[in-house]
Length: 189
Image (cartoon, rainbow, N blue to C red; front, side):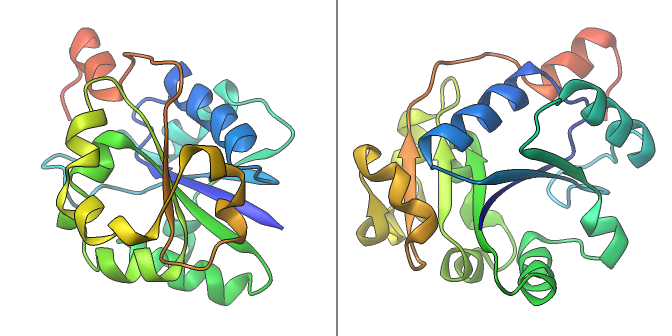
């Protein structure tokens, strides 16, 4: 079984998350996608809304038979993606995981703790975000991992690819972002 992992604070979850999830299922040929609603993001200066609220909002928004909403990180006490992936692989040894991220995350992926371990542990599916295409493709991580890149036309092979492997796919763009929604609602985090 191949499972895409979309991690984040989902503060709040929105239609853009739904869109990239549906595109990831289709483009990468995934069997399932798990939304990993994190207790907090170490790269953000302020904490998110309460986890229970974000989990409820995610479940209310994402209604798809092949998508699960999970608080796995809170359950096992991991804080960083590399730790979470090690725990997931220990708990689910027969599952082929694919880390999913937006192009904006690839642009700063080299700042993530143990980012090279993440890339060596699971294939990475990158979905274009508005304004992120050039930054992502020219990022430090993209340069370091350039030989491991699959073409857009080979995206369906990503789940079966041995890491390091990554694929950048262009999808219909959505300008939605949790940060912009919070700003519009006057809820800084």
